[in-house]
Image 1 (cartoon, helix red, strand yellow):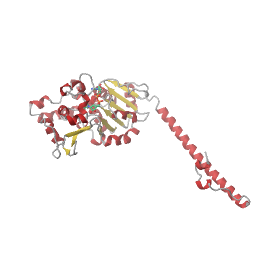
Image 2 (tube, rainbow, N blue to C red):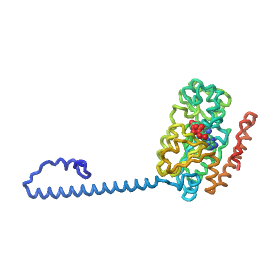
Image 3 (cartoon, protein in one colour):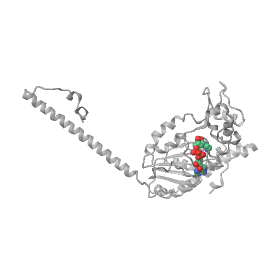
Length: 371
Ligand code: CNA
């Protein structure tokens, strides 16, 4: 290391140049100054090395912590760990699979998924229904599907209420959802805890002039089978659902910076982790954060090289949340919350459903969820 680079030395000291060695007193002063400079360098180096040692120690600790976190990587072992040790800062990340028991099909489940059932829309490719270019030329298929999916027909599932319970117990840092069905809002997860990564039916804008339209305005058009056209410029009015190729909402980019660094449990439910950048969020947690994937089918990319803290529950989201509630002693709370809220929705629906068509689309609680 050159003197210039050594901590504690200044540019001036390095540029002093030759001195007059004939004057003894000056030599003494020089010697003293040199010794002071050396002492200063020594102190600075000591401080630097002790900081490096501290870093090394904390790296070792991290390495230890990022080793096998649980006794074994089974769901049972994870539940035992939760019961014995607790978690404090939980993030949930979900996809269409948490809403299938509410009656809303997902995209990719063979047979029942939307992609296998879009023949009636005559699309060149199933994903075109969420492609902006395609929508601009032919918006009808999207609005027909929007009528089917529109919030109001469906009741949140036990999995939604489990997440609400995490929030009620001050354990939920944030809920990241790809879903556009608004069931998290209906389940009572507060807006500030929600990142609706793929947007929402809650707000709507003209694709041309960006004029805002209310949910009620658009709903009337969608259910009246009228193409929603902007009153200002004749552009198409679209719900703020993020189509392929569109930007995600701003807080999708800002909230993870606040949330993931100190998350101690990441629960991922009902998603194929096929859609990016949402899927990439799972990599944002620290190496010692336990990640649990709850899904009907295994997701290869999730159980990749880092197998030290990743658990997969192969099955239904609702079954998994009932198991978690059971071990944590929350069963009655979850059951009461889910039944109370569901019956309120049923009552509200009965009041507002005045015709047979609406009756046919009434929300149902699947038998599977009844306990
Ligand atoms: P996806 O690709 O269809 O994957 C869903 C996954 O959930 C699949 O791997 C299924 O095996 C699994 N699954 C289905 N039902 C259950 C269940 N009951 N329990 C456990 N696992 C189950 O959907 P993703 O969410 O991964 O893809 C992201 C898309 C889907 C987003 O852009 C969404 O907007 C879009 N989407 C949303 C909804 C909705 O809002 N409810 C419905 C359909 C599609």
